[in-house]
Every structure is written in structure tokens, then in C-alpha cells.
Amino acid sequence: MITKAKGDTLVVGQKGYLKLTGVKNKDVTLKGKTGYYKNGVVYSDKKGKITLMAPFEKKGKLKSKKVCVIKVEEPKLKKTLSLKRGREMQLKISGTKTTADKWVSSNPSIARVTSSGLVTAKKSGECDISAYIGDYVCKCHVKVK
Image (cartoon, rainbow, N blue to C red; front, side):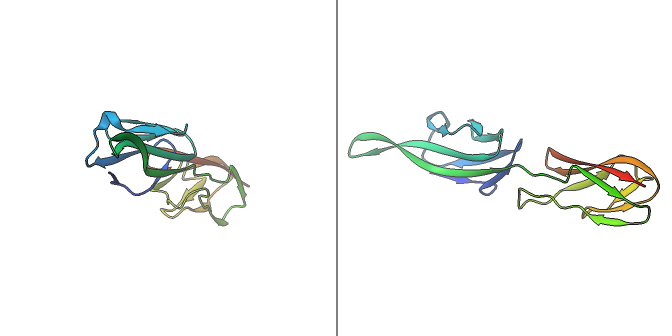
């Protein structure tokens, strides 16, 4: 049996750790093309589902059994945003239930961003707002008029 240690959802580029009970690592195989599995770790490459299979015996015959399905999500953020000086806009990540761990402005003097993704236009110019979800980064280009 495979027990998921970090839930049943990963973000593209994330890895998940699995606890194996009664199955050897080398016996677990992956079905699908959204990631790969190696030594108890599932790596997610693209959006989709990762299905892990492990062998078991039934009436003396070796069979394969689906033991774990992990959903892989691909977060998205609005590509561009235009704001007038002094205005605010809440950025939201779509394509996942996961929230950003951190929001960062490439130039806070042009546009500032809070830990919840609220962007405030400070002065004319352009910058990028980045949302970090683990190692995955979404970017929005901001133009302030």
C-alpha cells in the first residue's frame, strides 16, 4: 500500500514524498506522462494526473493494482495589468487550490504587492509581480500610468 505523505495534489515542478508499506520502491511503476517516480519521491512535470501502480498477488498470480492517484495542477496568473497611480488590484492565482507562499514586486517603488497579492500602483513605470508556490513562479507584468 502507498500512503501519500503530502496530500493528493502537487503543483507542476513540485515533488511529493510517499510512504510505502508492503511494497518495494523498485516494484512501483508510474502510469501516465505527467511526472516520474524514483525511490519514494514523485516528481511532477506537467498538468494532469499521476497514477502509481504496485504489484500484488491474487490466487498465486501477480497482478498490478492502482494504489495512488495524484493530481498535478498548473497555477496561472494574469499576464499583464495596467493601473493608474494610487489604484489597487487584487491578483488571484487560477488553476489550483494552492495559494502563493510569497508575492514579490521587482520594483516596489512602481508597484507594491502585499502577502495576499494586493497590488498598489505607486508611480509611473513598469515592473513584474511574482507569485511563488513552492518552487513554481507565476509572473504578471504591471504598467503604472
